[in-house]
Length: 477
Image (cartoon, rainbow, N blue to C red; front, side):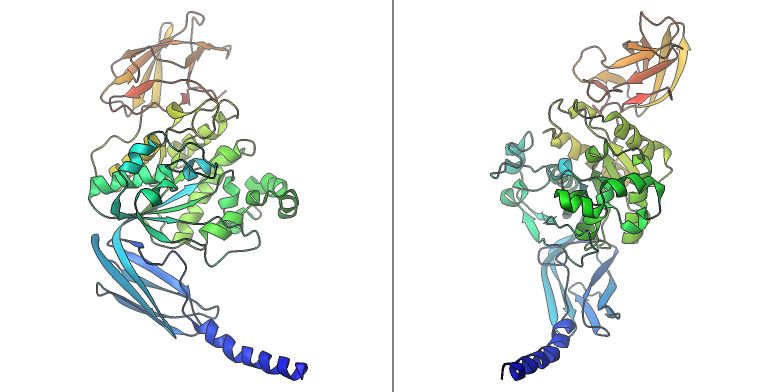
């Protein structure tokens, strides 16, 4: 009797399975309270039964249809209207109906990386972030914004392959929801909302302590010598045995990025690099590869991609990663990229500096200038050229049209010069309008200059808009 019952149950399950498989399913990124990118062909996607016809109908009058492929995957492109804070709806119809409500149309940004992007606005009771950002009380007191929507992807590792979904939900921004949200992303999004006067959606996809290779698709890394050392060092079997599964190459691409890849956005802000300081020999190229591959996966080949240069910190060798990040910005030839300098807001003893407001504001300046046509200065002084003037070097800078100054009113800090012996000595730097004259009594004939070229140092050189000078060296020694 048990055997007969088992056979009947199995047959009953076989009849039910196709019905379950035929259900239209949407990733969590498509859910109530969501934000859609304005005035764009937005990608709507999900799963259903193979061959099932899917129609998508919007409250603003756009509609489209598709047929699920052999794997049950489907997608449509739907034209979105200009920004509106009037709640909209989507209805996705197949064998069943999925309804999504309270949708706003505005500007949508990815906010990705490791712990300094993950660092929350407020103090967390579980002790993971004991203090929160500097100014958290003021930020949370100014956090009730129904037209800002937040999506926080849950941590999910997947070393074995790409996932279809990641847990998360869209929430309306208020003190309760912002408290545990990325501080950098929150400040960035709030500045955009206030400046543009349109709804803003922020997608936080972060995990602390993770190298860039964990966020990179395996297809990009296979057979590429830039990744050989890391693929060996962080091999899946080795990392699973040690319990360090978040280091496995591709595991976060598979678990946290692939499920949302293709969700139409305006751009991405990225804060990562600390976990590559000891495996960062090829960081310049691996960052370029990540940018290109993400753009390809999103099918947004010019997707804006802005990244933070690592802050000053005394316990790890950050100079090399900072230089790689600068090289990507200024020397890679990639379009629509930019770098936020954070060397002035670091903490010598804490890899998680609490000055997040400055970082978020600086990301916003890049977006406002480049994506939204605002007349704002978005970078601090960048070394351009030098000439010799006796025992002095005269330095010229980009992004210094209004002149140079110091943030604290004191003498310029953290310059060094060297002669042909390649030995650097602390130097005096005198501001001459938009130029600097740099010299050292110990170097009669200087040929090279460096600024903030240390893992940790105190800096104060800024332009007329108060943005910090970017660390640099004139030599290639």
